[in-house]
Amino acid sequence: MTILELLDAKVEDFMRKELVTLDGNKSVCESARIMRDQGIGSVIVTKDDKPIGIVTERDILYKVVAEGKDPTKTLLKEVMSSPLISVPIGTTVREALTIMVKHNIRRLLIRDDDKIVGIISQRSYVGDIKKQAISLELELPKGVKCPYCGSVFPDKEALYRHIDRIHVLEVLFAPP
Image (cartoon, rainbow, N blue to C red; front, side, top):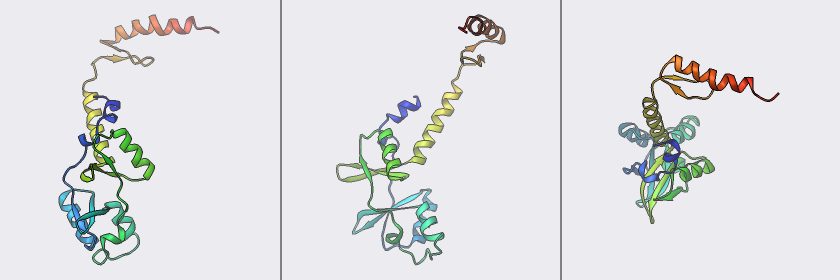
């Protein structure tokens, strides 16, 4: 699968389905511990069991640590980003990334009708692209690559014949 094909994939192919939710009256410290223990970068903030915002590692760093606030006394509802931005199932990754850039966010909730069913992050998507790129590199044909056009040849002799036949002639017969 090429990078362009990955961009046309659906968000549900990359979303994380297990969302961690915490009441907005919980402390930032408690949220940070949960994020660390579960290896996640955000929690969904709720009020009366309904999602109302999101707190990310960056929110904790910028809105709590950098401001000198006490994370044991600062509540999630005080530092959450709100309103939540979401896209429906079936949205392409390209569309999701466009929305993330437009809103300057790194995470996007995925909904099925009105129910939140997952989250996609730039980090998870980029990680999948890197894995795909590595596998593409491993599948490259073996041989010698032409520095002018990128064609691959089985050995240096075949490359030299190609350069002499194609690229040297292009230079000799190029219009002045």
